[in-house]
Length: 218
Image (tube, rainbow, N blue to C red; front, side, top):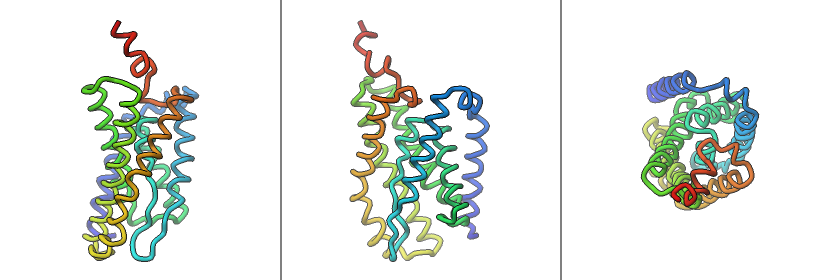
């Protein structure tokens, strides 16, 4: 492993340890809705990350779905669920063990932090409304998250000498504009369906806060 990979692995390991220490596993086991949300999120994310666009001139490309995951499970739940998916892919030989830390930081930690930060900001600073929740908390963070992920991962690949930056710029970074809207739409649709049909699964959503605002004000 390179020095950059070791540093990334150490940072990712520390993040997992801190998150695990503060994660309420007892509630997850006792509440059927939380357990169902976690299990179904794991299965869906695993399927999404298995279907990747393989390119000969650059790294593989896949949708993240981390914005919907974060809003559904919360920050700690999303980190642990996505990490379980990553470890499953590593065990199956779908990802390189040497890049475990890098992938954990770029495809899990970074986009999840973006989504949860924007969610926290909108929750406290913007009037709460269903459309605001879907657009500002799911749609926009999803686009920003995949752009950040691909930018950070490309930077790692260039710094570690795996790919030349010109190659990454032409065959990897150039794809980002094409993925922004599909990623955003995918996450926005997922959260719309969850909020309408399975609101009890969504950790960050409450009918009282987003649908009954006028009643509360009156």
